[in-house]
Image (cartoon, rainbow, N blue to C red; front, top):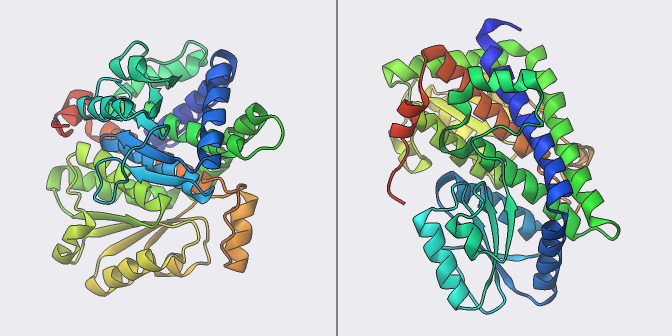
Length: 387
């Protein structure tokens, strides 16, 4: 593997390997808890209860992605702390995500919900943490350590590239999303829910692995993106914007936080009016036809901004506008949508493209950190420290 992509490839493969190991560990060690969560969510749907998402930072966004999957299945979902948050009622469910399990604001939200009679599902990497002890049911996420079941050569990779992967819970957050993918499919299964849980996660990871091969086959594209972003670490220029719609919007937000940890000059879309020639717009869209991202892409081209597209549709309008295209693969169900342009997000919907886009961008963080020798302590110092 070319040295210029070694950390990217190592990080990507590590995230896939940990995802596979974590899936097996949940099925082996927490089968009962998984079934209890599935039953609890099914009852909530039947009784019209609201699913409330609690968390902070990227953990909150991971929870929001799970919430989006539940919305597609017809659930009423509310994000705690947002302007349009719904009131918590008795027997509602709070899905709380916190790798540490000690996030102050998250725990305060959960404590308040318990007083109102809500049931708590926790996703955390820390057994016996405050969140774990508050929850009715907990699914444990992989944390900063690497499970012993992971092959020795992968653990070696972790030792070499530990810095870009561990700050602020990347492994926990991506695996929280995987758990959400599995659970959302298991809820709607008519057969064995555990089998459906396993199949959904396996399909997602396989799609990501095939996409890695696709990326490496067209490696010049990813190298261009990493090279341009790497230059911004020292120069604080160009300004970087990220955009997407739906779950892709949430992936963009998660990536923006990670790029900020690298000291890149990342701006939110509220600051789009301050864009200038030579800036970068990263657009994430599976179909490449989502209206709002296309509006930003068009305005970017008119302003002289470079457009980097991450899409599953190389023939899309977005791909044709872009300066660089990262082509990822998607599941057969979604590929059919790309052909027909008819949205049919039935229970078969699996956000495999979105998950793949997330770990692709996470892996660019690893390569940029490797290129500049950026240490975990430096990245942590740029992490928001007020909850």
